[in-house]
Image (cartoon, rainbow, N blue to C red; front, side, top):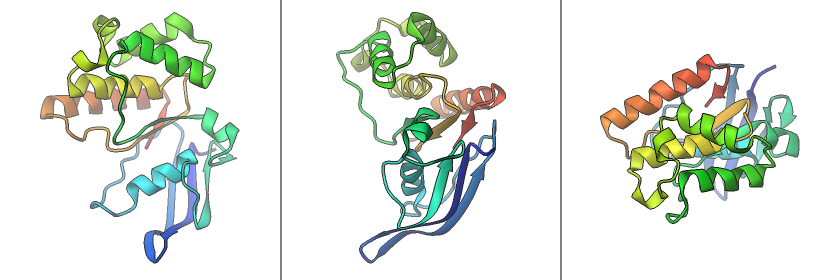
Length: 184
């Protein structure tokens, strides 16, 4: 079974065609990057896979379930391109909040493992507003991994990062792929 399968996806916003018959497949444990200019429909595709946007035509499935269904949403983690976390929360508080939102029963152990995975184990008690952009990006990836999703959807995961930050995120994505997490 594919982690993500999209066939004949089309999305129109009035007369604007954001997607025109897109087919894409992300296998289990596969790391796939979408390349294209601004306005090519990359974010629209990711939002359809998350169930945030409905396609005008075609079908998208996450781990065999139609995109947007409860079953599909429970199999994926998502980090939007322009995310904002409350600055007054700590890394641990933010992950705890997302555990409650997703009904994850991983508790403190899951939060500690995720912070270690993204290299923020020493920032557990640090407020988001005190973190660099790169640290916040890695915290966002940790947030998307709450509940051990099979598919991770990241929209522009290295945008606004310096070269070292980009390398850190790419290394992290490779590690996730190695662990069997599918990443788009």
